[in-house]
Length: 257
Ligand SMILES: Cc1cc2nc3c(=O)[nH]c(=O)nc-3n(C[C@H](O)[C@H](O)[C@H](O)COP(=O)(O)O)c2cc1C
Image 1: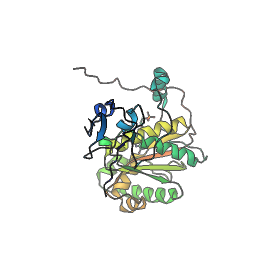
Image 2: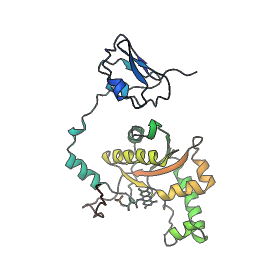
Image 3: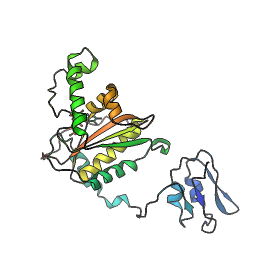
C-alpha cells in the first residue's frame, strides 16, 4: 500500500508557498490558500519539511532530527580548508579499538551526503570480528593473482603482499556498497572527514574493492543487499603516524568559460 510520503497540516499551513517554490519535483501546489501535496514521483528529499516556517509538513515514514540547522559560516573557511588539506591516508595503525559510538557517527555522516535523486542507494558493512578471515582470503587471492597473467597481476607485480596487506592491522573496516559509485564515493568522503575529526585515520582500500568484485567468496562473505555491489572500503583505526606538513599537489586544472 502506498502512503503519501509528505503530509501537510492544514491548521498550521499559512500558504506562504515556500515549499512549492523549493520543491524539485514540483509535487506541491497552493489550493485554497494551503499547500497541497500531489503524490507522484516525489523524491522525498525533505526540502518542504526543512523550509516550512510553521512546521506544517511531516514525513511519516521517516525518523526526524531534533537538532537545529547549523550555519556553515560558523566554521572558519580558511581553517576548514587547512583541515581538508591536512587529511592524510593512514596506513599505520595502533592496536586501540574503535568505539561503537564512533562507528555509528561515521556511518551517520555518510547517511547525510547528497545522492542523485535522493536515492540513498547504499549500505554499510562493518567488518570487525571477521576481519582476520577477510584478510586471509584477500591475501591468498592476491598472492595467487600476482602470479597470473591478468591485468590485476600487472598492477600488483612489484607489491610485497604481507599478511596485513589489505587492512594494515586496523581494528575496523566499513565497506560501502550500493548501486551508484558516485553516491557511495560521496558518502565515503563524508565518512572519512568525520573519522578524522574523531581522531581516527582512514585508508581507502581500492585493492579490497577489487578483490570483493573479483573473488566470489569475499563478495559473498560481505552478505550484500540485493542489487548492491561493493563500491568503497574504508579501513579505520587510530593512527600510529603523525604528519608534520601538507604534501604538495599538482596545480588545479581550471577552465573558466
Ligand atoms: C578510491 C581510492 C582507493 C584507494 N586505494 C588504495 C589502496 O588500495 N591501497 C593504498 O595503499 N592506498 C589506496 N588509496 C590511497 C591513495 O593512494 C592516496 O589517497 C594517495 O596516495 C594520496 O595520499 P593522501 O590521501 O594521504 O593525500 C586509495 C585512495 C582512493 C581515493
